[in-house]
Structure formats: structure tokens, C-alpha cells
Image 1 (cartoon, rainbow, N blue to C red):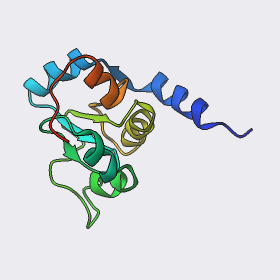
Image 2: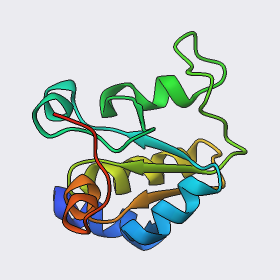
Image 3: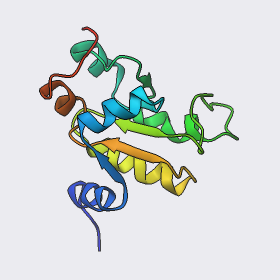
Image 4: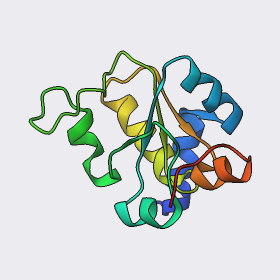
Length: 126
């Protein structure tokens, strides 16, 4: 039976680690890699979380795969990786995908950039 996007996000959130802004801030201080999955236009319009690596959602699997010619060196299946998008849907789906790819220490920022901003956390720009 087909699933809606909302059902897919709910299922993904049930199998990945969901972090609030305070937890993400602590993990960043301990050296976690934060990956911003939003589109370039979203970053330009609303700013970004300082230190986040930008990888548009459509390129994540290629950037995360160490065997891909498009692999981005900071992405490592053995390191702590936290994903975020605008509100938490894309990042939950992406975290589940990275788990499928062998990433064992992946999580996502539940509530996304909006939740981070609403919690009064630091942003850069726009």
C-alpha cells in the first residue's frame, strides 16, 4: 500500500535519533558534524547555523558514500553526523537513509532550522 510523505517522515523519526536544539548545540561543541540539507535558496533567504556543512538533500547519498567520486571528505560513516533541514522532515528521511548506508552515529535536528532559530540559537546571515 502506498505511503504518504507524512507517513514516511513519521516512520523515519521512529527509527532515527531525534535531537532538540540544546542537544545539537552540546554535540557540536563535542565535535559532531552538522549537515544542512536545505536548498541554496533557503540558506540565502534565512541564514545558516554556524559551522554547518551544506549538502543539498538531492546530493546527500553521493556526498556520503566514500566510494562515490562525489564523496565529501568530512562525511564519514564512523563519525557523529547530525542532519538538519528547515523543519525536520527531510532530515529525518535523510538520517534513515544514512543508516541504511552504514552510518551508525547519525541523528537529526527535530524541528530543523526553524526550531533552532525559535530556540534562540546562533545563526549566520542572511
